[in-house]
Image 1 (cartoon, rainbow, N blue to C red):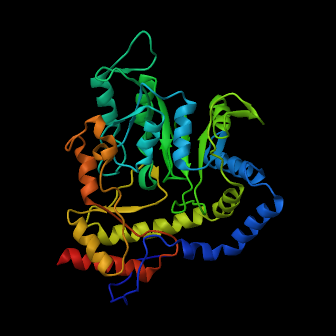
Image 2 (image 1 turned 135 degrees about the horizontal axis):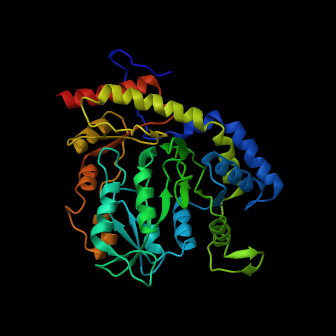
Image 3 (image 1 turned 90 degrees about the horizontal axis):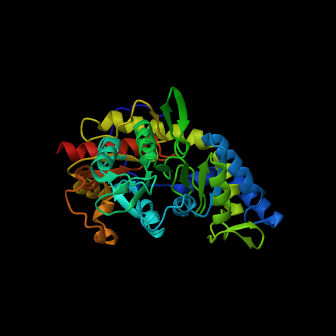
Length: 401
């Protein structure tokens, strides 16, 4: 177990990578090789028994009735939006402080993302800002059961909260807002497979709060494939059936098509790998938590450390600190062989791709401030005590100068 250690000098390592998947995979290499060989021997490579097994296991784990394996987390978002009939002439409320795919998926359906600011302590979308936007900007028409944005005349149909950095957004007020305005909730839980939140005196997993939830199995996630992959969870049988068609060219039976769909199937090989990794997920998350706690104890008087809400059990996917000296600190760590990452250097509302939406600097000050101050430190199973101590000593030395 990782505990506090005295501040003796630690011999400098050659490099501490931001993520080390090689070490992780060495520990389970034999199991993965056997799982892959079984797929090869079976001759079934798409939508086979391992995908079905993974879907059942994920649905059970998340507390939903259904899970639908797809080719990526981005595809999962697009399919959910399409499955709910969201497209041209619609708007979807989401956060400007997230990976580009969240808003990109909205745009690729023909809908438009509407950004509201975040809570800078958790980095997640602020429910107060959602309610404020709807109250100030929307009205109801007798022709639509959804609210209409009086500025754009578009129909607001959904909220996509992002459970960023492994922690759930505040779902109780978001659910209340969605019910009041008859909006769908699609949870972008790409970074938060297994995170929980206490709601109505019951712990609930990410992905189970809304109409649907999506996860990414990109290799760097806390549950990652050896390539791209994603999954959608839902308890809505009608939506699940439609999503199963949409991921496979709209087929309801071989060569019989009810919809226009995609080629977005989770590979059997990736499903087999994920089934192996799921056995280790809780152990790996506990390791992440010990690293998280170590960082917080050592750094909380020097930088703004990430806050965990009292009703949340995160999965500690990223450890993101904030400091006004972010860029200088990043350079210092790099010179000392420590890789870090900036999540995210430019909020979505200021991206060139969304110039046509006419957002400007100052529209979402919390997101903009976090973009300037945030720095993610290495946090992954296999990061050893000497490496963590060295990272903390390097940060302490720089910030105390």
